[in-house]
Image (cartoon, rainbow, N blue to C red; front, side, top):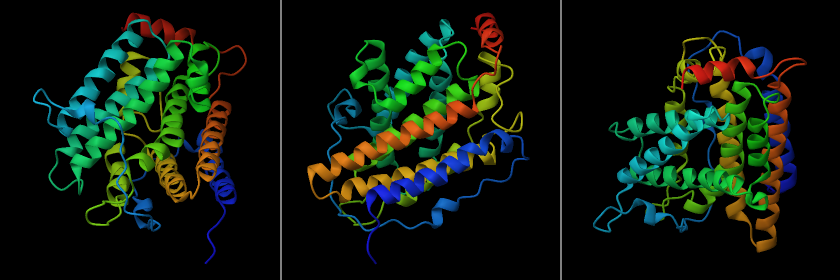
Length: 312
């Protein structure tokens, strides 16, 4: 069977994902269902069993110089906490995604220590730190005014967070999640490799297993206590609802497929073309989220900002 051209495949994925996103506003209040691991049944394509150099191994070295991937996760959480505390102290809206990411990483750490949860927890630890570095890099570039180094999807998310009359608190969270998954994750996956070079087995089962711990993250209570009592991703008091979880699962499945296309590129020109499509796709997802999670006329973040100031 002839492989679909990257642009055509990308367009189909964008259409499907936009349909999911556009339905978010009215489905967010549907009664939560049990987590359904539907992406587990979507098999990976065959790609070369090639090992890729991430360039971030130095972050995982312990005091003796040896690589310790569990220490990697500890360092990542400490760095996330440092950045989050600074954002929360000033009620900077970027702190909403920062908290979501911190809580997610803490839940990931618990899952990585559960015997049998991941097939290769040390490799997933490595992915965790590489993934976080992409967010740190975008954030630092924005902070220093290096706009050319901030990916479009991240520029959209950070700009919306800077505006008091733009995205709602849920929108601030989802814009960051979307930029990180739809833009960063495909490049991270292609960087670290989709196949175990020693066994030739696909790493997709562990990639899909991430969705299981994501469904356990109780985001709403933490956001309501520190940022916005009206922050609701679905049914109040529950973990991420099935609607939000399904949205994120779909994004993560698309990220894996983009990574397959990226690794399958035969020339630098083809690779650049796939990356350009990833950037465009992630930006379009952000625009759809902003449109469906935008303050209405005469609305603003004033009440949640006042709440945050009182609960810092």
